[in-house]
Image: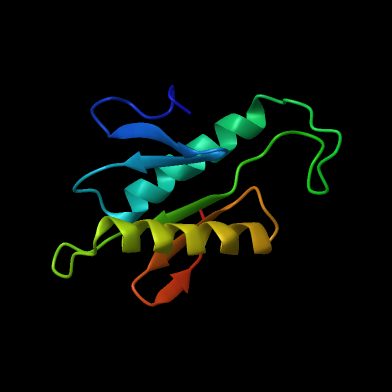
Length: 111
């Protein structure tokens, strides 16, 4: 994941256990989604076997995105809560995918 997040784009940090947070500033949702999709694909393409997974025979990642809103900023707890909701939606929709939480609407983007 570190190889996919360039220093000029933002920074990656472990949030706990198997969860990570990537912080980027001043990006539109399409660009954030492309970064998330790039990470998802890079992890899948590593081909790390996962014989106990009910989803795939290799390690995958599920990603939830919260876009935030400059005109109506949220506190960090709410941003993380929304991203977490999108993450669980990603898992519920089959895993190895990216879901975006935007305001009160959950949307799915395709590359």
